Image (tube, rainbow, N blue to C red; front, side, top):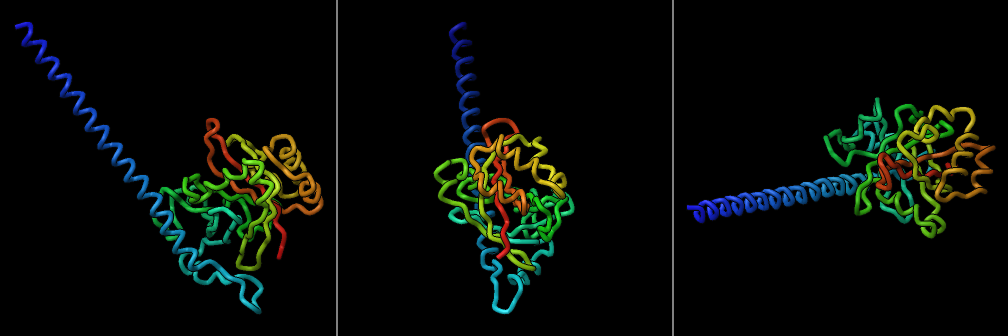
Length: 248
């Protein structure tokens, strides 16, 4: 009798373990499928958008945004960082939650969109403008901001472009920071509407890498674009890349 009970208990334990492994395997398979679906959706949207990337046409003051604005009137620009996968339209919603999980078509998407802080001027007229994008692998969204943490990449890759309906800016990358999401120097853009000297001092004291010559020039002619994404170094970590905006 005792042997029968022991065998029965062992069989039950084996069954529970087997069921647990099956459930774990099913969940892992679903998670992998779901992750691939999210990345595929982001890739499809970017491929569609690249076909509509604005171009500067002869005789026009700025790039042609007509196609993009027909898709979504919240499009306010297009940002590109050279030698990265960052090449996206920029949107601005009523709040900073509008496009966090919404694509340019207005559909729910975990990858979200690249978007301008809702407190910034949509024409990028502010001395300091802040962009957000999700951190994704495979060079999707703002995942490639991580590349600038490497000093060699930072030194060798300094350029980008911000296209606007009324003109365009050359971007000159001058700093990379790793900060908490509570960093008011970075995440309070209205703080720098008249004087960005405090921001420049913060860069000098906190940046992983920065270019002093650009910081010195910005003191007299402030025009900064910040790009932000999540990081994994600590809780609520954010990777920040800062670029000087120079009109074409």
